[in-house]
Length: 124
Image (cartoon, rainbow, N blue to C red; front, side):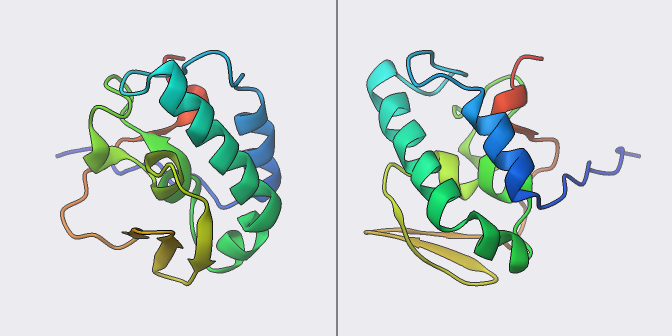
């Protein structure tokens, strides 16, 4: 029997603290280049400034937003949270959907694997 997935609570202050420990000049995990990481980092900081409290209030968790595969990083997008996967800024958020400029991320995607870690804990 597989272990139960870890529940990482919705905590905008913890998100900010964990994420801001990542430097925009150091790629944190596989699946990102220096150029793509700079864009993702900028978009994540924008999300933390503008949308984090609302997302937490709507029930989005740390892994829903900032999760990555614990060994493959963004190479395994099926493990990844919506914010780390997009290069665009968030334009709207509901309890089940984050809208970006041209795409969207849905929280309740069936068959999504468990076992992700927050991007700031990758490799630790």
